[in-house]
Length: 279
Image (cartoon, rainbow, N blue to C red; front, side):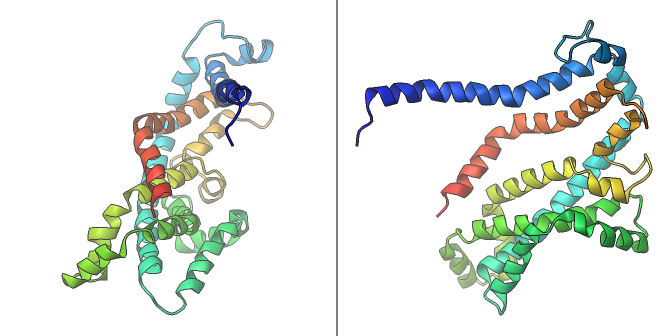
């Protein structure tokens, strides 16, 4: 049934209006964060939160960068890079087995792994803390890699398994006729063709790990081992907090993700579209 001219006109007006509203919802908090980062602590308490700073001074940025921020940044980059690579490797191998190799308890094991998505990570803090102390990894960046990989595997295996199930079986059959074994098929065919799915897994888990707080708080205690989410504690006391400095830390912490998304936006969108259109 054809839509009326009034409905079409309403749609043409509603879509831009809703888009502008959503743009405001997502942009205003970021503008507030950046604007406050240029204020002094006294100015943030004596003026309205939406008042522009009297002068765009860089005192907060100098204080943050001259402290331990770069150490936190180095630890975050190392932990996230290693964890994401391990998640992509382990999850893709498991996904290939679940998607293409028929073995006993295939569905049961897949369901058990996927069920891990509903387990709250907070109930694992005590056993993970005790295990980390027992292994001698407490208060080191490597203490975070194990929990990050373990908590990211369920959703990653689920995404990649469903993606690999859509890869044509004819490619696998042709490779088997050429004498390729399971590992060769995985590395030569499934891994390259799963690029969009791997990109989705890397982006999703990378953002989650970059902003993760609770494990970083429990498993590390010294400045030399902590990651970026813990940087705000340098500007928070028992009775007062340096709000502009804290928002400066948050701004600097957000910049790598914003820059990465700005340069990789096209690949991200193409990867999501490729995964949604397969089959």
